[in-house]
Image: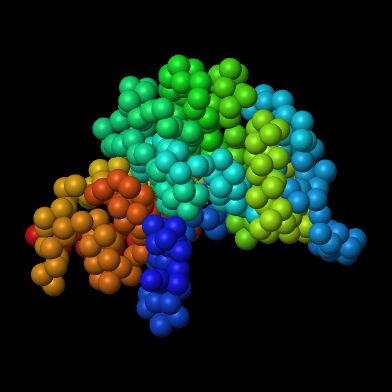
Length: 400
Ligand SMILES: Cc1ncc(COP(=O)(O)O)c(C=O)c1O
């Protein structure tokens, strides 16, 4: 009998974090590695936010706080939802956790029973299915393929919902594809949910502020107010404010659900870091003017990577609306062979050989539930992206 739990046996470690770890090791060995696997901006946290954290330390704001966040941060979150999304919440409808990751995990732990199903569009953020499994639920996947720009259709959503469906998970703009649903596309999906009143909506809006070409971000509770009472809207400061290491995420939804999430957190981690909470107050209440220049840089990098990748024979990639990822298909390369005689049978083999031969680290599509693809994070310098794409082009041109 294993010492480890049966629940844990159903779960795999995060593949993106494993690859990021491998990149670190290879770099430490002196290999010339270009890491395109990490899901974080390469910008520093803005100066006013850092200063707010230093002030918090100096003012002694270093003790335990309320389990799911200080009043000032909850107020700032309510103001943010009103300002950006037209959504009215009171502080009692808001929870703050150690990253959006903890908030999502708590929500699933607080609500899932054995056999409860969670509908997840694939490709998905790597943690969703494993969090569902850890909480005892069953992930149900809908394939959002290249032919539909990595978006699900209302018909697919309708067909995936059963009597056992508890949640439908949305993530727009998406990790790993960058695909963002327009208001009309989202409305068509929320219309389906109106037909299924037992289903709740978990909207992961982590990439809200990272959108290009005038894309209008919207979120389910805003597009369909009738879903407000059964929607948990999750967001955080990690991506937009370049605060991945500070670990602050938050959500808003019906009060009983927020209380249940608080209960899980009260018996696990207690409050998120007090200093980070004060930094997040400044992030949400302070000037937002660095977002537009950051987005200009991201858009330029997206276009650079897309142009170079789409010029490679065997690679196809649609233009995503947001986030800082592209998710090219390599279906035209499957079955080819490297000069060393390795056959590219899967996207995992492709990514492994690419790393071995060229030092470019990306993440294979199977990790996100849709193959044959790979994910590139373009949150790195233009020079590194140009060099990486040139190496990928050379690697592909040598396949036969
Ligand atoms: C789609 C998505 N949701 C949630 C998270 C969690 O972010 P954090 O825990 O840093 O707030 C991430 C991070 O990579 C993500 O890509």
